[in-house]
Each structure stands twice: as C-alpha cells, then as structure tokens.
Figure 1 (cartoon, rainbow, N blue to C red):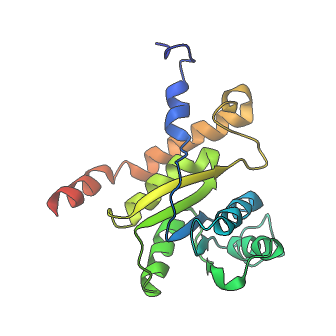
Figure 2 (cartoon, one colour):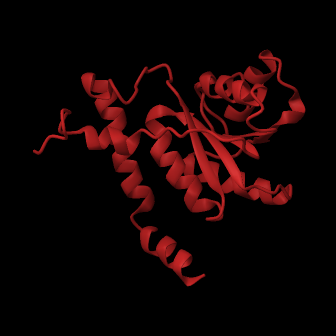
Length: 196
C-alpha cells in the first residue's frame, strides 16, 4: 500500500471522513440528532458569536435518553441550560437517522419559508463527511454548507481513530454507511445538476 508523504497509508480515509470548514456568518445552524450534548454546546457558542440567528436541531426518540421524548428536546434542554432563548431553536422531532435529519429539516425550513444561502452544520467529527454529503444531497444545490465538529464521549478524532478498536470500527462503519447511502444516488444527483 502506498504511503502518503510522511504519513500513514490510511491518511486518505482520515482526510475523507473528517471534515472541518472555516466558518462564515450563516442563516442557520443545523444539528443532526444525537444524545451528544457537545453538539448543542458548540451551536450555542456559535449563536453567541453571532455566526447565525437560528438553530434547527433534528432527531426523534432515543432510548439512551429516555427522560426526553426526542433527541431534539434533549438538545433544547442543553441550550436552555446554557441560557439560550427558546425562540432561537427550531425542533424537528421525528427523524430516526441522518437521511431523515436532512429531509425533515429541509421540509421544516420550507414550511417556515426560511430563506437560506449559508448553513453551518454542527456534527460529530467522525460523522462529518456523511452528514455533509447527506444534507448537501437533500438541500438545494445553491445552499452552501460549512462544517463545525465536536468530539463525542468516544473521543474519536482525525488524529487518533486508528489507535483503538472502537475508533477503527466507528470510522470504517462511516465509510460503509456512505457507500450504502449514496450508491444509488450518484448518477441522479449528477444528472439533476447537469440537466438544469
């Protein structure tokens, strides 16, 4: 296997899976559902830094947080604990996976007649590529996405995923999920962009 310059043979996986953007002021912050409170903590930091006026968090019931009816409600609770005003957060409480997070979020944005040009996607580090691809595929192609990531309780990041079994399993599972999410969609997405 060919090594990258001065790196490891699997650095290309790290570069592909882990996405982080330089952020610009945006119209909304999007959070794919999770029981990871760090996602909302980061979103609140971005709101307080005037990077966006709204947060849309998407996520349905999660048995790991049974005291809350949804991941969205749980993350709203985190936001309120951090002093964020309730009217800054939009909840989508039905999504069960990343695909539904993106679809249901876009449907909610349309129903509220929100006008978007730029979005900040706040997600877990190892989930960033799949989340970005999924939201880009479900939102209009003229909307720009910027990615801000957090480590979750697993502590998996671009620089350490390959040193533990849980890190390897988690990241390689992301590679598999990207393939299963998009294998049927590559051509239709390409054609929809080039038919316009």
